Amino acid sequence: MKTLSALALGLLLCASGPALAQSTGTFTPEITAPTQEAQESDGLEVTVSDDSDWQDLGIAITTFATDADVPTQTTAGTTGQLGHAIAQVVAGDLKNNGLFKPSGPDGLPRPAFGEVSAPNYRLWSGNGADMLVQGYVHAGNDGTLTVGCYLYDVALGQPLEKGGWKVAPSDWRRAGHKCADMVYSRLSGESPFFDSRIAYIAETGSKDHRMKRLAVMDSDGANHRYLTSGQAMALTPRYSPDYSKILYLSYLNGQPSVYAYDLTTNSQKLIFRTTNPTMAPRWSPDGKWVLFSMSQGGRTDIYRITSAGGGTPERLTNGPGINIGGSYSPDGSKIVFESDRSGSQQVYVMNADGTNQKRISFFGGRSATPEWSPRGDLIAFTHIAGNLRVAVMSPAGRNMRYLTDSWQDEAPTWSPNGRIVQFFRTQRGSGEATIWQVDLTGRNERKLPTPVGASDPAWGPIRR
Image 1 (cartoon, rainbow, N blue to C red):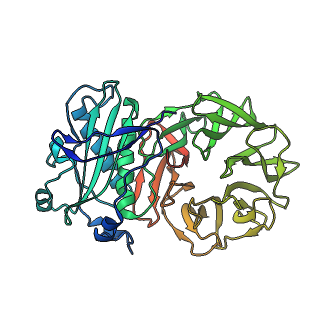
Image 2: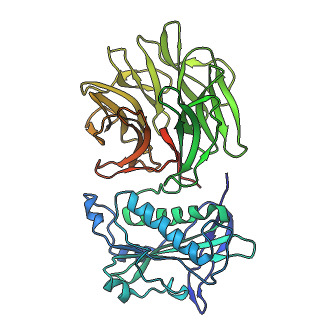
Image 3: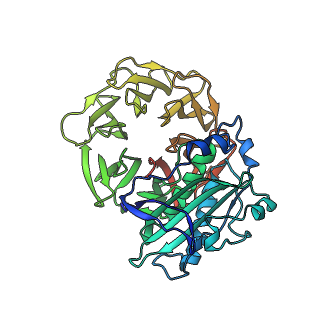
């Protein structure tokens, strides 16, 4: 995987415009934070009682300026064109998360390079903007790009946040996602999630002869790439906690095989292979264990094996019925899974060693495919009562509520900040699958663009 370089930005106005950032090496964001005095006096409350409170917040996002409009090695064109494209990424991220309704960059005034760090507050106040996002793009002699991003409170006439990144030409969209993450986190008080990736199963072919390949894309659907050829069916991917690998199930020559695909070397390592039916491999939060379900001797149980592979899998469930899945709590102390030991599919929780197994879903119908939120406060699952709908509940099995209301929505996966749930939706009749996402209010639903049919999404952690 490609990396970025972090920048400690001066971001001070000089005669030629904003001071350009200086690289500090490997990308671990160290963005200058507002002073304590600024935090106390900026008048911004980050706690809201309802998402609609933010929908009236006018956020203007302008085309990013440049000190020199020169060609770049990106697909966007010159630095001037790239500044517009990056602003579009920022605006798209903030709009699609359902919390804000930003405007721009199309139709808005384009600031000069010198105005980026000294905005005309009167102009933007007259345009009805409460918040203003501006930035710049600078092309280095070595082909790299420096991207700066500023967030301003127009009413108070002062900056709220600033950041910058030095990126390779192929990674220019990441700078846009990082800028959107900065704005989103500062205004909402939530953790970032835009600079993340999604693994999923790309589906092509007829309903009865469908090819299923492992694929990845950015959180907004860009930078799509196939990882497997489709010669062997791929299923149920999951990112490793450090983002370096994707765990998935493959049926190579008819044999269920659990692989870890290395995204750095584009190679894969066999974790476990058997002749028995196997399902749903999952990482532990520390990356040391892999959970999976396996059928043998007329029963299906949940097992774990070291992520290094080899050795004998350890069985964690040992009761009646079919026990499937397994999603760790964020601290790794518990596992949520599904079982039909009560007579129908229901959600259960157990300790990480398999002890203290107890049912938590009592909502009528059936409950399946549970996934623990990264925050630890909720469990998303598929509720089956006629239609298949995505729902959430507390880890104790309380306060169940639906997030979707369609014919067949299933297999939820969480955004890195635990605010949005992604799932796949199957169309009645054709069986075509598509990836959708919805926020925790259940009101903001969005279909993700994919070049072919798509199922089994897996949202990875925030990229560093």
